Length: 216
Image (cartoon, rainbow, N blue to C red; front, side, top):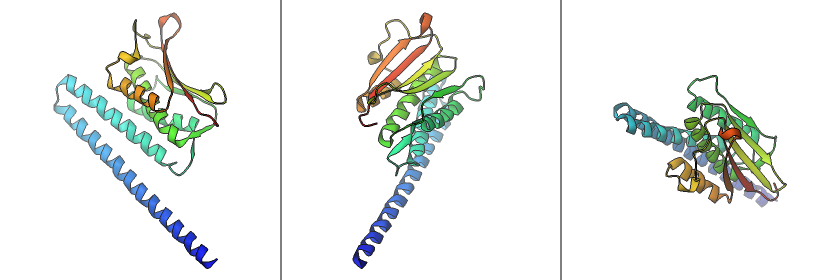
């Protein structure tokens, strides 16, 4: 019994050490990302307009990635994440970043109160980040993010705007944009399916990611 107590204490001490090191690593990673963002924004001041625009986009993506990663780190030692709260906090961050104080536009989150594995929450958060960023570029409207359970094992996340809709013949597989390439890589990673639909009367864009999670 004494030996078991010693072993349990040693295991507890080891776990605390690992967590402390993980927290330190995450803190350094986040600070490193912020330094990169600051460097890119400084370059924007002296770059020509087209280059400055691209640097600004890159800085925004790195900053958003850092916030998503840091937010998820708060639940690193939990198996699951409450999806509605996670999406709401992510969208609040993105609204602050992308709308620049335009209080007439919002990102609305519609989701039941349920949990998903933490390992799935990160790629889903990054996909939603890219889809919202794309909507803001093309649609001067509110944006709705909707999480739904279709069947016990099939679920979806949709990003819907009220903008001008998709261009004729749009094919995401042919897109050369970095954001869409990131989205498609993440969708493939989780074994999901992405669909792009145009809203009623050709206005608005409805992007839906369907993914499968047995035992959800």
